[in-house]
Image 1 (cartoon, rainbow, N blue to C red):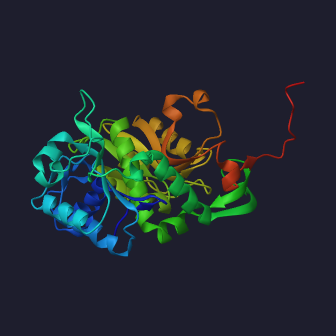
Image 2: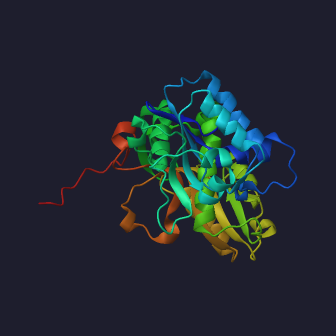
Amino acid sequence: MIISRIETEQYIYFNLHAEQIITSNYLVDDTTNIGIFEERLFLSTFERVVKSLSEISKSKAIVLDFKFITTCQPNFSDRIVDLRKNGYTIIFLNISQKLVNKESGIKAIQNSNNILTEGEENYSRYYFFEEKKDIQNVEIDTSTLFKDYFKEIIKKYITINHNRPHSSSFVYLNSYVDLKRFMSFEKELTLYSLYRLALKMKEEWKLTQNTKNKTLTCLSLNSSYIVSILSIFLKLDVLIFDKIGPINKLYSRPHKIIDVEKEYIVVSDMVCLGTEVKIVKNILNFFDANYLGHVALIKTETLGKGDIEKPDTTIAVFSINSENNKELGCGIYTDLQHINTDK
């Protein structure tokens, strides 16, 4: 299983750190695995990537992102040299100078464009070939690459002309995003998305592998799957509230399970207007627990970024906003007539 492969007309992208996290947490018996805090690249991880190349045309470049990778297991240099000898055009992203210098097979390549910016420790782009190639002029923005890919895939799981009331927020939705079906049929993309979400959470709350005072909490069946993956990636405990959502009932006894010494991060599959998140936030605050923030796979931006206070901002890997909602067919409306305030 490869989770990070994204193909364009010019190249095929792989995130080696994401693939390593899958290896160490799901594919090998590694009792010392440390979630997304792993910095080693196993040879078995790279072999999985190489194996997936058997169906790929050599006319496209292979882009290998080394962000967060600081060291590789022995024989990696031999494998990457073999890949080049087999006719593949290879580009490294975010590879450290130390790793380049350590791996003699990589360092041996002489390309005048492999320049380390003064004061930097990583090559933003390192060409593993010597001759001039057109691919050197191609822009590779990994954030835009992911968002464009996610948008094209999620389109298949959006029902247009839904036109039904949102039962917990008293508005009408003209579309429905079937995230349960998305997560069932797009397992690789789901895992890669959650990996990216975990990185956002790590940066936002300065999480480490030894963080003990923070807990993930969720409020639906879909989000319980999401929170279980994030728990593995981030090495955090989980608290599950039952039946918070449109039916607005709580069957767990909050005072028995909430620890006032912990900080809680609320996890959702999708945040539309945030009603369910507000319910959980109020429950936590009522029992004097510390609500830290909330995250989701997808969020709907109904207000401009400048109009949302920091504690109410949802961290997500994809946003439905004013720039893409028409393309996605997603809209929110009420039964009130529009008032033209320009007059």
